[in-house]
Amino acid sequence: MSDSKAFSEEQKQYLSGFTFGADVARAVSGLPVLSNVAAGGAGGATQINVGGGAATVNGQVLPVGPERIALQAQADTIAAGKKLTKEETAKQAKNPLDMWDEIIGWSDEGVFPKGTDAFLQKFHGLFHVAPAQNSYMMRLRIPGGLSHAWQLAGMSNLADRSAGGYLDVTTRANLQFREIPADQASNMLYGIRELDVISLGSGGDNIRNCTASCLSGIDPDELIETIPLAKRMHNYILNSREMYGLPRKFNIAFDGGGRIASLEDTNDIGFKAVEVTEENADGDLQSGVYFQLTLGGITGHKDFARDTGVLLKPDECVAVAGAIVRVFVKSGDRTDRNKARLKYVLDDWGFDKFIEAVEAEMGKTLRRVDAARVTSVSNEDRQAHVGFHEQKQAGRYYVGVVLPVGRITSDQGRALAAIAEEYGNSEVRWTVWQNLLLPGIREADIDNVKKAILDCGLDYRATSVRAGLVACTGSAGCKYGGADTKATAMQLAAVLDEHLDLDVPINIHLTGCHHSCAQHYIGDIGLIACQVEQGEDMVDGYHVMVGGGWGDRQGIGRPLLEAIVFDDLPLMMVGLIGGYLEQRDDGESFVDFARRKTDDELRAFTCVKEAV
Figure (cartoon, rainbow, N blue to C red):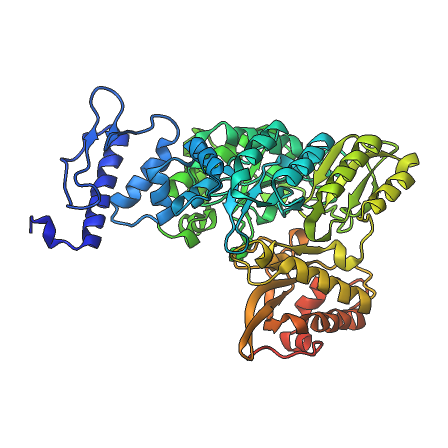
């Protein structure tokens, strides 16, 4: 069957891809290539040339630097007879990092990219969010969540000129611009760079914003500062092109053991600060502060990062993280986007095999320490991100400003920048709880700061409901959103505050889809949006989960109710939380209450029925 016409078009594509993958795999390994094979489709024969210097495939020079490992992983996948996802095929055809001229050209023409170019452009932080909005969203990179007053003022001005006139705070202590017209993309890309902020790698298959403890350096209880480590990791990523060859997105977080959690256990790589005391030290292990290496957190897939048994000195973390990412680049699934996360490599290989691969990548053995020799700390205060609190610097305070579901207007951004400049130390710190902190305030200035915050339409006070309210963008700005989560979160909070006097923190997380950007599985109460049939219409609704937590309360929320029409949800929540207030034991948290009660007992507090 030598006649290529005997093959179907699908078979031609398959054979062409298979041959291409096999030849590329040999070429990048420095081996002689197979003879050219024509499959009769997809451009005919694969033309390989390895003589006289760099290898080429169909005239394209193969990279000789660190990007080879991603190309090799793609080629190995094809050579094994597997089919790359369309995203992997797009990355194989065009390096997203080399699209600057195209992006600027689209902006000059006032058009949005088409097809897979819309995906590739996400590597530069630009998301075309149609049909929710016919505009761009731009996500930034703010390592450790630390900005400065002049940057916030500048970003507020930029939002007025080229975006929607507001800023959104994300659950990675980061910022997003929204409602960016097609012809403003270049102004945004140039504008953020003039403010010493970038968006490169904030979307697509990349390592997202590196998070840290937002009180780093000012927390009286922390074991170690972590924002400097997040910055080091950030710069390592920016200057290592192999860090952009991942099969899927990736998260890294550092937690210093202080009062405000960084949620490191929900990340692909989590670095958790711990102590080795004098009594547990010996010649091979000195006393001091170390980081436990945890891997595989992805709560949207119902898994937390697990301890590897590896203990790292602070100055070892960045290099180890780099090696972990390179192993993931080589081994991650490039055929199924749903399984292309580190968790699934760990599930397949086991932790021992994976750590051995990391050690081989580094050419050194990592320090393994029995957990019994390590002391963990628990200093978390679930209200520490709201209101005024003393810093470890004598006579200085920080204030946690409440941002309604993580959004501020440009005017509010400029006002907060002015407060930070006049009364603080000019820092603005974003948190994973979708609010911000202004540190360095003198005690004598607290009353002036309170007034200034209230004057701009924000508050430093929050009820126990609003302090723990987290919401993603939802259908108002995301094509995946099943409901308008930000709007419904505010409506829900208003009803709960009207009917309940809640004296303890309860986290309510509303997320719009299975991507779980608001991490609904770790909320005391988690809500994930859905559409519910009501008569002849489809209306916004939510599935309800209870009993989630992080850190010492770690756990994935369990389903309680399905497909609740939003109109019924607020009173159902009043009943559920009211039942907790009536029947809790002394000092019992909501999560402990929810975990000891059966589903039927909890449902009995509600007054609505699940949709049929």
